[in-house]
Amino acid sequence: MKTFITEDFLLYNETAKRLYHETAKDLPIIDYHNHLQQNEIYDDKNYKNIYDIWLSGDHYKWRAMRANGIKEDLITGNGSDFDKFKAWAKTVPNTFGNPLYHWTHLELLRYFDIDELLNEQSAESIWEQANQKLQSPELSVRSILAKDKVELVGTTDDPTDDLAYHIKLKKEGYSTKVSPSFRPDNGLAIEKQGFIDWVEKLASVINMNIETYEDFLLALEKRVNFFDEVGCRSSDHGINVMFYQAASKQDIASIFKKRLNNQSLTSKEIDQFKTFTLIQLGEWYAEKGWAMQLHIGPQRNNNTRMFNQVGPDAGFDSLGDKLLAEPLNKLLDSLDQQDKLPKTILYTLNSRDNEVLAATAGNFQNAEIPGKIQFGTAWWFNDHIDGMEYQMKTLANFGLIRHFVGMLTDSRSFLSFSRHEYFRRILCNVIGTWLEEGKVPNDITLLKQYVADICYNNAKRYFNL
Ligand SMILES: O=C[C@H](O)[C@@H](O)[C@@H](O)[C@H](O)C(=O)O
Image (cartoon, rainbow, N blue to C red; front, top):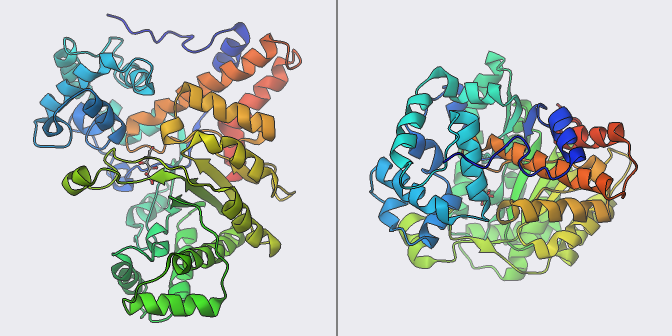
């Protein structure tokens, strides 16, 4: 059976169609935050089969398969690639209403020219067609990036990473910018078991001893400088629960020492360490002109049995519900008071906090750049039609959607760039509907500028591309 993805998929009125087809559709992509592997870009990898590119790392699909009663063996276990693909194919017809249903068919259509529904019956023929195409030069990683006109891939990288492939790509003069994002979560996670090992790793990377908090900061600063030389434009912080606890540098120095001596810390001390260190990092980001991305609110690794079996980022995280307005405003304010607040993008996993983030952003805007503080696009559990519309409308209600830096995939798959198409269709429909309902003037030229800015120009300007 043919898919339902028509030319005008998700575009429910004439203005929406015009905005999408005449403006949004062909714009290049700036995917400023994702989890793609830079070595695969450098090597111009061809994926072995569709399981490999679709299912081997996608915890969204794994969750849906578990909800469909599939055995773990066919999800992250020892099942063959084909059996796992078939288990996914069997799941797909049960995913109506979930964005996975749309993404799956968009990806089949856009990358494989397969205009057919995936289910148990079509699984074998789709497996063969897709695998054959994956072997062709047309579907190598670089060809995908070229076909989608991807101008920037913003990867996610630990400060201890040597960025070897980013450097090689840069040297080569590769047309898509592959820019690292500085993600120092391990350096902030003083409460975690692996903290001391991480500090040792950091020390060995920069070839110095880290014995004091001063040393630690120096080491981090060196890595910020190194990332900047390699073309980093932003940092990324996974923050499960927002924190703010003021303390002096002396206090932090003794907290750090305690930790290195394996003494236990109070939760206040932990938050003091995180607060002080993040503020220090934020100052450097501001100096470099980077954007600081704060991804706030997951409650992670909720299923202990499965965590022991398959580890983190495997589909057992969900929404946290701790309050964030007070600590977040205080954190941003501390940086702003010293005039050291970097460009900042705020994301929440719990859409209950959409209004809080959109309103918070408005407290710290200034003339440095329009939309300096962004309420970021619908993230992870919000990355669906309702979630994206809700984010866009909240942003418009509380701030200026005109300056929104738009979509990023946050994905681990090169086929996910089609989610920009999904976002663009939804955006054009929201804005087109405003015109159709008489909520904005009948000025298609101006509306097209909104669309072009949100889909492309704003991000280009924001990330200094
Ligand atoms: O879209 C979902 C994401 O890829 C999710 O897995 C990440 O956001 C990850 O938890 C992270 O902290 O970076």
